[in-house]
Structures are given as C-alpha cells and as structure tokens.
Image (tube, rainbow, N blue to C red):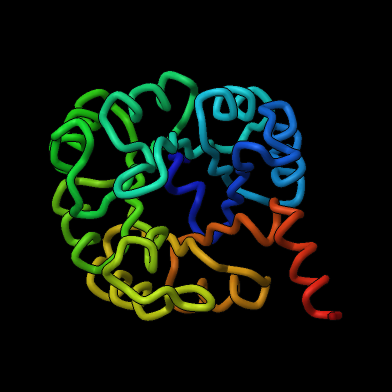
Length: 222
C-alpha cells in the first residue's frame, strides 16, 4: 500500500510543542507519537528536524514532516532547503506552505514542488484558500489541506473546521486527496469533516496539547 493510500479515511495526529513549552523535547514528542499510533493514528504530522528523526525512529506509520522558521508570512517549511532537510531527517511526506505569498528563497511554490518531485518526495500543500488549492494542484502537489484557512489573511478564521473551504476543495478536486486540518476539536467534528468528504482528518491541539486542553476545562468551570 502506498503512503498516501494508507492515509485514506484515517486520523492523522499532529504532535508538536512550541519553544519554551514543558514538552518541548524530541524524545517526549516521539513518546506521544507512539501513543497516538497505538490509539489508531494512521500517520503523524510533526515539526522540526530533531522531532522528525526521533518520531520516525519510534513509529511504523508514515511521518508528515515540516520545519517552521519565523512567525509571519511563509514560515511552514518556507524554502526548498527546509523541505529537503525534512526529507533527509526521515519524513515520508513533506508539508509546505502553499499560499501564494512570496517565499524567502525567491522560488515560486511550483518551482519548489517541481524540485521536490524530481527528487522523489511526496508533497502536502498547506492551503489557506481555494485559490491556494488550485495553485497547489496545478503544481503537482500529492495532497492538499485546509491547514492555513484563517491564518493567511484570505479567509476569516472559523471557530471550528473550515467546512466551506473543505467543501470547495473536495468538490473541485475529487481526484486529489484533501485533508481537513485546523481547529478540529472533538471526535464529533472529526466525524463531520470525514462525512463532508475529507480524505483524512488531522487533529493536533485536542489530542497532543495538554495546556490548551486544560484551559478548555478550566475556562468551562469558571
């Protein structure tokens, strides 16, 4: 079974901790990834070369790797160099910013994907709008996702998953795997996005970020 086919109908768990957070350590991320695999995850999405390598050494399911650098504009695997490094660290799929904004290395999104595909890489396009998705598909991306909906300035940030964008992407690109990622905060929402046609669903915060999960409960009982 191919890597992409193994994702069909499944739950992808995003395992990330940010600098300065208590769990910000590759070994910890790898342990959480292994726990997610045992819980039924079909793949792990993770950030940073050390985490990619550590997680790849623990799990048997595919690893979707990315490298965040910076905090504004294009910062999810922003350059071809970052993408190549993720692959070298062990990522089975590399996730990159697929918005139409200028990239730090001056390459276009299409240039970046072309180079990666020539090297045999699988590319996940993190989109923020339907126009991003169109560009990503034209460039030859293997997977498109709603990851950046509400974060790139083109769409309003929804309280939960961006069902409208998901529907647009699924309808326009039935031949391309469309992942729903972003603000999927409950099993019910995960089931809803799958019913809406998503190829697979990505859940991060609601599974792997205890600080946020704790705050939801703490705020609810105040």
